[in-house]
Length: 411
Image 1 (tube, helix red, strand yellow):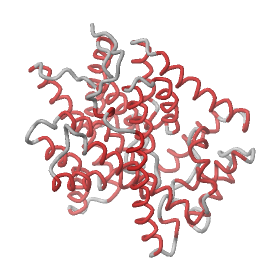
Image 2 (cartoon, one colour):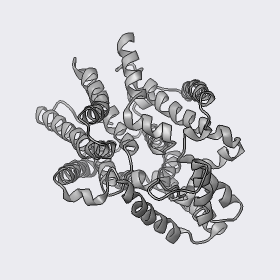
Image 3 (cartoon, one colour):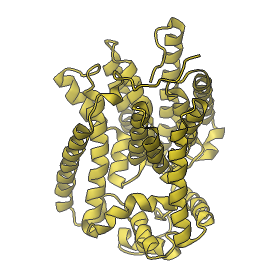
Image 4 (cartoon, rainbow, N blue to C red):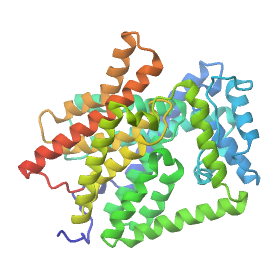
């Protein structure tokens, strides 16, 4: 049995970056994002073109601090009036608050930003997260590619279709990704309490981030890193307590809105829903996810190294049981893609294989659309093919390396 490490691994990629460097990189990327979205905003008559999914939650956040429920019907009507410029019509996307109330702690700083600029700022923040992640990952000393290849890597990351879609629509996967990678980086530096606190914020979008803290807390309990669990539990409990004191018992309203969202948007043709599990592609995705999760759980219980495989399996299962309207929630597979790219770094084909995997969503989408497949069917095909393909590649690579005994899956 492997004992729990007592000192940070100085060679680990997450430990090769100083806080000042990270802040500088984020700031620069934020300025780039602000410049780009300000430019596009100036050429558009409607400033709500970007970040539409932010507005109902921001209006709900404002209502929360005024002592009103963000799940109230008037919040939905105000958001839809703002986005459409009129009441929503039958067949159009509905905009509900729809998230756990603790989301207000993430969005509150945006309340001071003028409404005509908040969408620009939000999209710039999401862009800075993606761009910083790609810069940090691609410039690690043991991964750093040649300048030309580095430029291709950055563009590949920036134009990764699910992430780009999430930025333009103002969706939250990149935020969950930031909380997840940030918490993992803190854990690997033995800052367990802070890691647990940050991990609690991954719960603001349960449809993609619910299983993330569960797996990490299970690993923390197994290897007696109790400060992670305490930090997570205390932070989440404090956020929930404040919300309950402010607006009362909101859990039924949240669950009701989640059901209403799926019922209303089912008429718009969801890209993925739990019903799809009963199809052949759905069963393949489900079985491969359980296989990955099972392998990861065995490793989690027997080794103290960070449980990447269990985490990937859990994230995949989290996605498969929830409804998704478009492709942006596939952004969560950046966890898998960046991990694969890191482990492929010493292979001559590694970086190019990684680039191809990142461009597959675009290739699938464009190929299907050129074959006159409708947009809704193209999104469905992307969900039916891409997750299973990534998991199958990961499992095949893991089996190959396990057989060779060349890789120990040290985090």
